[in-house]
Image (cartoon, rainbow, N blue to C red):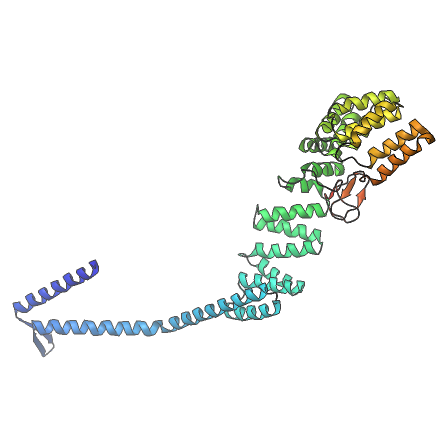
Length: 417
C-alpha cells in the first residue's frame, strides 16, 4: 500500500512538472553544421521520453539474451538435481526393502546426474555392503576418506570393516587417523574401547571405558598385564575401591598387602569384602591366614562370619570349619540353619551328609541316605561361568578361554550389580 501511494505521488509530480514545462512554451533548437532542427518544448520532452523507453527496452533485451545460456544451464541443473533426488529416494527405499542391486542402479543414475558427492558415495558403500561385496564397499569408503569434507565418514566405514574382519592392527591405525580427522568423537572412543577389549589391551580399555563399564574387572585385568609391581598394586587397589563386592579384586588386593607385610590391612580388606558380598574364595583366603589347628580355624571362621552373620556363606563356612574340628553339635546347628535358608545349594547338604557319616557311621544309614538324597536334589554349587557361552571356570579370568569373549565370566554366570 505504501509503495502504491509513493508511485501515485511520483506520477502526480511528473505530470505537474510536464504541465508546468508545457505552460512555459518556447522552442528547443539543435544545430548540426548547416542544419537547424527546431521543435516545441512539449514535443521535445515527449521525444526524449520515447527515446529513453526505447533505449531501456534495447538494453533489457540485450541483457536477457546474454543471460539466456546461464538460465538454461540453471534449469538443466535444477532438473538434474530433481531427478537425482528422486533416484536417491528410490535407492533409500530399495535399501530399506533389502534390494541392494536395485538401489545401486538408482544410485548410478544419481551419480551420473550429480557426480560422486559424499552422500552418494556413502549410500553406494552401504548398498555394496548389503550386497555382500565388502571390497567394492571399501573402494567407496576410500574415495570418501580421500576427500577433505568426508574424510571421517570414509575412515569410519573402513574401521568398521577392519573390526568385522578382526584386523585389529589395521583398525587401530584407522582409528588414529579418524581421531585426527574428528578429535573427541564419542563413537570413535567407543569403537576404540571395543577394540581394546577384543585385543586384551586392558590398560587402554580401562582408560577408554565409560562410567558404566565394570571398572573393577578392567582394573584387575590391567593389573595382571602390568609388569611394574607398584603400578600393578595401584590397579588392584583401584579395582577393590571400584567394587568391594568383586571377590577377585578383594583377593588380589589382600594378597598384595600380605606379600608386602601389611598383614592387618590384608585382613581388613578380606573383612570388608566379606561384609559387602561373602564369597567362598574369600573364606578360603581368610582361613589360609589362620593357624593350622582346627579349633583355631573355627575361631577364625567365627571372626569373619561376624562381619555378615546371617549370610548363607557365613553359616556354611563356620559349619564346615566346625565339622573339620570335630565339633559336630556346632556344625549341625550352622548347617541346618544354612539348609533352611533361601539359596541353599549342594555344598550345604553334602556337608550335612559328611556330618552324618562322622556322627553315626553305618548305624545312621537312614539319616545318611536322606542327606545324600537331599544333596543330589539340591541346586548345584555356584561357580565362575561365562555368561556368553556357559562354560564353567575354576577361577575368574578377564576373558573366556572357550569363546574368547572379554569380561563375560561372572560368579554363577550372572554379572554383579
